[in-house]
Length: 364
Image (cartoon, rainbow, N blue to C red):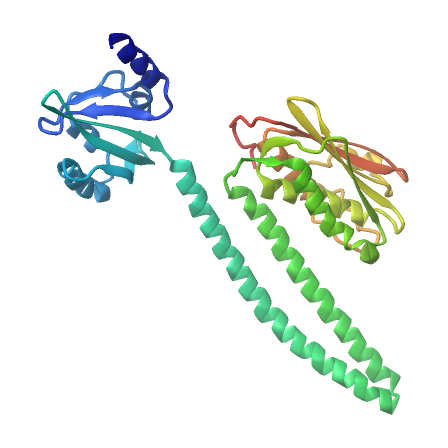
């Protein structure tokens, strides 16, 4: 029996969960494992339960105290509580059960820090609120523009009978200006939203990268007739499981492929390749476009560079796209490089570890 207790004690001291026990009558803490002591910044176990309750957020303390007094009747299961530790608010999920051992009352429980989950959800809600605001603005402004476009179209159609070329030309010119203005408005909001999304914490999860990228490229493949550029996906691996934030990876790939489309003439090709290197995964985006001039290469990943190029079809650039790509890739533990020759094409190579280890976000 003693050996089993020693094994359980060793397991508890090495567990990531915060495990503890206390006397519900006297309010004495009998045990607190290493994870809990580390979380609280304590070198030794405090004597009284009240010493711990002082760190509970004031709005949660009273209700938690009532639940602790009623433990004999009802256990506490997955109770969210805010703790203030070292000046920061942390969120713990508490589970506590009463026990009666040899006539002695004791309560045992464990706690899990889920602060990152709460912050992630709060950021997502904030992010969605911004998106909804943007959609409301766009829908209002574009709806008004469509009404004007309809009137101008009616004017142009009605003028076909009169045959006045000046009226027709002015109507078509106005229609073009309105379309360009709305396209610029949409692009500016999308770029702003893309940058803002960097503030959303990483949501790393294990995914099958082959399926994710194949499904994403299928969307571009459907637009081949519109762009006149062909898409290819190459991989020798049916499944590659790795830790990644799928949404941010899609943002990166969308940015790289959009750049390729800007500078790849009709009948060109964009090829996305996926390689399993064992502990790492490689993704490349290669095009047969006009390439990157040598004079631009040194500033390519700078946040605000003055080496901006207009796309082959007049697409404007804000000079931040590849800086965003590099920032997001490094945030997810990866790296990005490129090779390019004028009139021969460009290839961007991404490399990610399969297992993600949390590290600092690069400076924005």
